[in-house]
Amino acid sequence: MKNGFVADANVGVAWAVYSQASPETDFLLDAVASGEQLFVPSLWPFEVANALTVLVRRKKILQGDRETALQALSSLPLIVDEEGISRAFRETAVLANKTGLTVYDAAYLELAIRRRLPLATTDLELVKIAERHKVHLLLSSPR
Image (cartoon, rainbow, N blue to C red; front, top):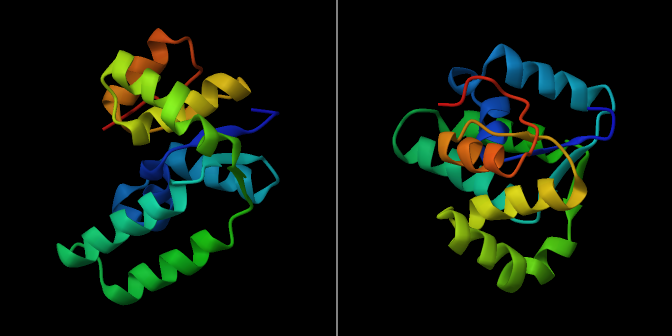
C-alpha cells in the first residue's frame, strides 16, 4: 500500500461506527493515521454523511454519535479526486453501465483503476467487479 489506496463509503462508515468495524478496517484507519494516502472520489463525504444520517433515523446510532463520527471523519487527510467529476458523465457512467454497478460505486472503481491503487470496500458486488478488472482488494471479508 505504499502509494495509498481508495476507500469507499462503507469503509468510512466502518471507521465511524464500531458495529461496522473489523480488524482490517481498523488496520486501514491506523495506516491513514500513520501517513498512508487515502484517495476518495468527491462524493465520499456525502455518502458517508448520508449513511450515518440513515443510521440515526433507523435508531442504530445516536445523533451525538453521528456528530462525533462526522467530526472525526472530517479530520482525515483525504485526497479528494477532483478529476473524477469530469469523468462522471463519460468513463464512470460507461463503467457503471458495463458492469451493472451504481454510478456511485463505479466512481470508486474508476478511481482505483485510473490511479492504479488498491480498493478497500465491504460491498460484495463491488468486490466481484473489481476482481474482474484486476484491482487489488484490501479487505478479505466483504459483507
